[in-house]
Length: 192
Length: 155
Image (cartoon, rainbow over all chains, first blue to last red; front, side):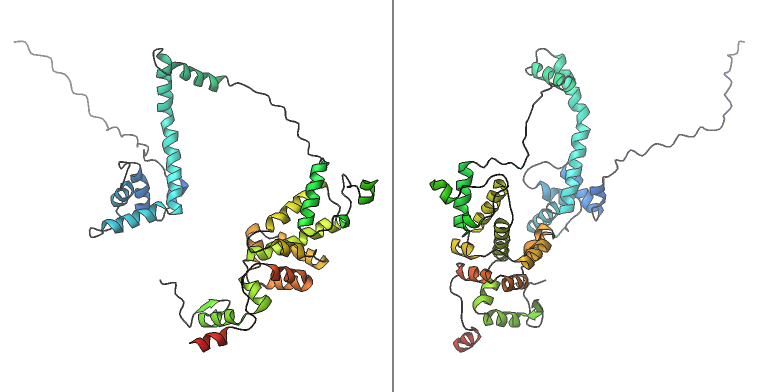
């Protein structure tokens, strides 16, 4: 009788320990951390998850745990309005906006890559132009000559305007000290 | 919390509400004008005297002169009439020093310094033409006798 060879069991060694996972929770920014309670933070986060439109802020406030079961719609609307106009909440929303936009960049770049690979796409040329603009931007040299010297051109129009405004303000033009850049002609000089 | 002041609480400048009302009713003439003209206008009147000092005492360029005159021209608005602007004389050296101190304050506090009228009173003592200008401002009828008695008689 033939016996089947038995597979020797591997001696059980010491169980390997898994390396601790890095925490994957996103860290809040300073504006989110500056919010007074977790409910405020939950409100800001809920604003991005609820369906946009009428009543979105109220729904976000409810999801965040504001109000009670007995709270009327008017009460909830007041709570939501106060929350969304709070300077601290507004700061946190601005911070979250930045986060969402920055984290969307890889997807935008992916979409752009697919666009320039597809010659039949409507905006194919525009996509190529966008990429080229960012890799080889056009350089424009603008030469501006700005004269910042105190010698302001005291034209006849300027002097006439000065005389008009001075008369309106009750200032006798003849009593004004001489100007640094130009001295207006006196009455006798003008007559001559 | 209600915003309504009770009779015993301090309402303004260390005065209770009835005291404050009585004080307002006791104002006559220039004091009435100083208290009832908006502080921005009071600041403008003083600023005009400073700008006139610059225009008449210092040598300036045409550009600086035009800028100063433009600044004076825009003060002629609301209650401040053109006659009032024309009546203001340039400030003296002490007034100039006060203005320098004033301009060293942050922008918002410069006008706020005129809130209780003391700065304007001091400057008008140095430059009485400010009071003349104040009288030429269009602020409606100004009482010449305290109104406390009139109100009591009416009630």
